[in-house]
Amino acid sequence: MHSAAITGTGVFTPTETISNDELVVAFNAHADMFNSQNAKAIAAGTCAAKPHSSADFILAASGIERRYVLNKSGVLNPDRMYPSLPARADDAPSVMAEIGVDAAQQALEQAGVAASCVDAVICAASNHERAYPAIAVEIQSLLGTSGFAFDMNVACSSATFGIQTATDMIRSGSIRSALVINPEICSAHLEWRDRDCHFIFGDVATATLLQRTQDAQGPHFTVRSTKLATHFSNNIRNNNGFLRRTRDQMEDRRDMQFMQNGRKVFKEVLPLVSKHIAEHMSHDGITAADLRRLWLHQANKSMNDYIGKKVLGRDPSPQEQPNILQDYANTSSAGSIIAFAQNSADLTTGEIGLICSFGAGYSVGSVIVERS
Ligand code: CO8
Image (cartoon, rainbow, N blue to C red; front, side, top):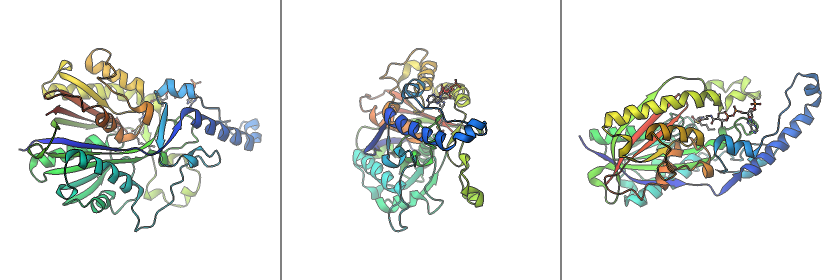
C-alpha cells in the first residue's frame, strides 16, 4: 500500500468584492421596489411585505464581512439581483473550467509538477455548469493532464470527499497523482432576493494536488487518514435539475436555487460534525493535544467556534482554527481548502492538522494530515 500526500494547493480569487453594506443597500432598494409594486396585495394581506436586511445582523449572525463574486454589477442591480454571467459558446472554456484551471496551475507550481505528470482530475463542487461532458474532462484538456477525469458533487463536503477518493486511488496504486478541483460559483445558485440567505455565499475556486508521498519534491502534508459520512436531510436543498426543466420552471420557483432551514442546519450539524471528528481522531490514534490546526468548512463563525471548542476541549486560538469567511463568506466546498492553503505553511515536520467539511446531504468529511 502506498502513502498519499498533499503537495500543492491553489486558490483562484475573483477581483470583485461586495461588502455587507453594499449588499444591504441593493437588497433594501429591491425590497422597497417590491413593496411598492405589491402595495395593494400587501395592504389586502395576500402578499407579505419584504423587510429590510441589516449589515449588523449579517456580521453578528455569520461573521461574514464581504464576499468575492465573479460579477458584482448584476448582483447589486436591484432590478436584477443575479450575476451577469452570459452563456459561452461550446468551443470556449466554461467558467468553472477557467477558474478551476487557474487554481490548479497554482497548485502544480507550488509542487513543482508538470500538468502532464498528473494522472487524474476530480472536479468536486456543489453544482456543475452543465451535465456533460464533465467539467473535469475539460479541465484535463485545458491543463494537459494525463489519464482520466470526472465530476463529483457532495455539496459543501465535495473537497474532502474528493481528497479521500484521490487518496484511496493513490494508496491502491491505480494512480500516482490527482488534482482535486473545487470551482464554486455560489453567486449563480443563490437567491439574492431572499433576506434570510442573501449574505451567505461567495465565489472562488480551489485546487489540491495529491501525489504518492515518495514523489513529493518539497514540503508537503502526508495524508494520515480520512473519514466520510452522510445522513439524508432536506434542510439544505436545491431542486434545480434536468427533470425540472419543464414548463413549470418558467414560473418563479424559489426551490430552484439554494434553500435551507438555517436554524435546523445549525443545530443538527454541530453534534454530527463534533462526533465525526472525535471518532476519526480516536481511530487515527490522536488526541486534541496532538492537533496543531483545524481547517474547518467556512459557513458560520459561531458554528466553527463551537466545533473548535468541542474538538479541543477549550476555545481555539485564531491560529489554531483560522477563519477566512469574514473575507470570502461561505464558498461551499472550497472554504476549508482556502483556510488550509492560506494557513498551513508555518507547520513544522511532524505537526498534525485536520481538514473538515460539512454541508448538504447532510455530509461530513475529515482528513488528518501530517507535515513532512
Ligand atoms: N437582516 C436582518 N434580519 C434578518 C436577516 C437579515 N438579512 N435575516 C434574518 N433576519 C431576522 C429573522 O427574520 C429573524 O427575526 P425574528 O427573530 O423576528 O423571526 C432573526 O433575524 C433571526 O433569524 P435566524 O433565526 O434565521 O438567524 P440565525 O441566527 O439562525 O442566523 C444563519 C441565520 C446565519 C443562516 C444561521 O442559521 C446559519 O448559519 N445556519 C447554518 C448555515 C449553514 O451552515 N448552512 C450550510 C449551507 S452550505 C452547503 O451545504 C452548501 C450547499 C450548496 C451551496 C449552494 C451555494 C449557493
